[in-house]
Amino acid sequence: MAEVAKLKTPDGKELDLPIVEGTERERALDISKLRSSADLITLDEGYVNTGSCTSAITFLDGEKGILRYRGYPIEQLAQQCHFMEVCYLLIYGELPTHEQFENFSRTLRRHTLLHEDMRLFYDGFPRDAHPMAILGSVVGAMSTFYQDSLDPHDPDQVDISIVRLLAKLPTIAAFAYKKSVGQPYVYPSNDLSYCANFLRMMFAVPSEPYEVDPDFVSALNLLLIVHADHEQNCSTSTVRMVGSSLANLFASISAGISALWGPLHGGANEACVQMLEQIRRDGSNVKKYVDMAKDKHNNFRLMGFGHRVYKNFDPRAKIIKAACDKVLAKQKVRDPIFDVAVELERVALSDPYFIERKLYPNVDFYSGVIYRAIGIPLQMFTVLFAIGRLPGWIAHWVEMHASPTTKICRPRQIYIGPTERPFLPMDKR
Image (cartoon, rainbow, N blue to C red; front, side, top):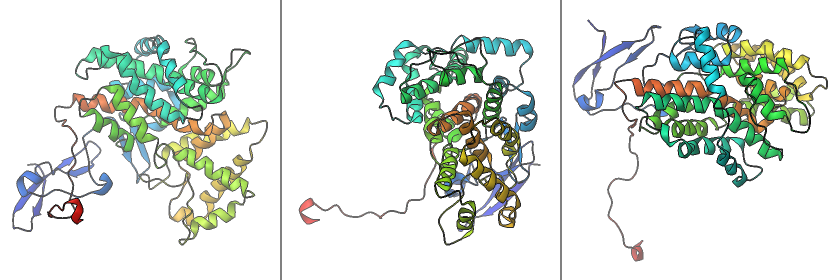
């Protein structure tokens, strides 16, 4: 017999709430019939205690520091996989065979170019436009160029939309950067890997040769993998919510990009480097800022430390720390903010205040430092996050549409405004 929880309402009703258990022994109260049975809803600001769906994509245990994609530990995937393999795994449910991987990669390479008319969009943006604004706008506009693939119920149309998004997002992003620095757009080179191609489009110019640094490619591949999915975060939930209205994949992903832009979500690594720069300008006095962070009467907070979900060390941070050290070791001219970062890391890993509160460096801390070392400009940090998170967004959108229990998202509320009152004509107000 299914396990249930008993709920007694103020008017004396007793309800049985079924307990749902996931494959990793996560437990939830099924309250789907609460309103119809008892005329009650739950109130949960930010949905921090509310499960919006069941999902087979990502498992996350913040207490134990566990992250798995489709059952595979993130540590194993990051060490042994190409980002394209992880994309395939998240979207289609299994790691690809060699033949599947080759076919998938070949198909993506055939769709890296943008429609030439899409380049005209870039002429309409100010030079100082934030690349995330450009990214969201151009992705949303893809629905006007690819009207043959907007039906979420047609598997063939969904498949080609997936390919177009994965293939073209790095091109869209690199063009946004070239626009900001006034350089010619560099077209994709389809003989390169996904990450190498992106770095070439970012940093090459037509007037001189450009060689992609293999260590930078490796570091970027790692960063994209660890960012590829993270359960029901703000942007992923946004993609699901928008998609639940039967909005096409391009529109749903554009909405996810907008959600990711916020400094409390994808913009956190950008905020982290801004903080390091602030400390550097103030004489690199790390102790001063650590003391400010410890002072409960001071509003200053150290960016890149601790995590809302992980109450242990962020497993993604463990993975990319080695890549961070390797990239920093290659720097011929030492960037002074890297010294600030190294000192902050030392303090966080040795100071009892940080250890007791488990305020370890998180993925945003290390990823921001790596992006800076590679030469990625600050405003592009969140764009790189979006490229990495894209397969996760797609996987959740596809999973939602495949579920027979999916409904259009429509949260309830508790109204706290004025009760009914009489209307007064303007001359009597």
